[in-house]
Image (cartoon, rainbow, N blue to C red; front, side, top):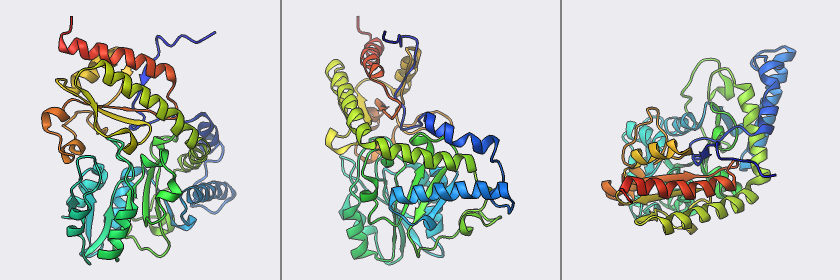
Length: 380
């Protein structure tokens, strides 16, 4: 007998956060209750915690194609991004990033009076403009692997080529917080010097992330104190979170290809259904250029904030752009950088799928979203 999902919420905001995978919860629980020793200690319980962290470090390194000694565990993607930018820009080093980066990159770059590269109308980095920003003073170039709002997948190889030719002393960093779910990650990172990840985007709990660094690269630590993480990030380790991070990566590695296929099919069903049922509705990024599970639409004559409130009343959870601390929404800086005017960008809707998404949720969304748009437009 099929289950009745009529009272369940439709969750289409996986780019903001995903639930903890059951296997991940099982893996981390003993480190909250039994193996709670501080891994910086010397006794047996401390050694047990430290060994679990080392195991997770190996998993992370193998999954990314990095050396285990280069994996620095952090509190999440924001800290990892900040460590990459501030840590690389010692002395007078300059940071360069794309205009569509997450604010965890944009704000540190702007804080350090860095340089921001333009993007094309399809969300790709404008390589000609980027070249004008590069010189021997550039310490780090940061370009997101998959954009968290539009889902645009970026080929990092042309950027690495440009770095090698114009600014060979610069480190190449990518925020792969979204990208980890949607691409062959080892291949995508082949020429990258640093990569940031955040556990809650792929089935680990919030509050744990990582910055992986190639051998020989030096970063100035931003947190000083106990000297943990080879003195690159001080602070008592979140042992249970780190164990969960490693377990979630193993789950992701086992299911990524099937998830991409399944969620790509559901995303296509969702896109085609909404565009056919809602006048003035279109994708911001074409299907072949975006990640399988991130769908950003713009709907003419609709204000995102009002639409999201109405959708929530009907049990559909979505977003307009990236999540922020207050929950308030400004027009997307990503869409602005891509050339969308403020009025059009104000009608954006991001529907993001993840490992937890089920087919019934897509079917319900295809019913609810057009009805809500019609209600807002005053359709009879």
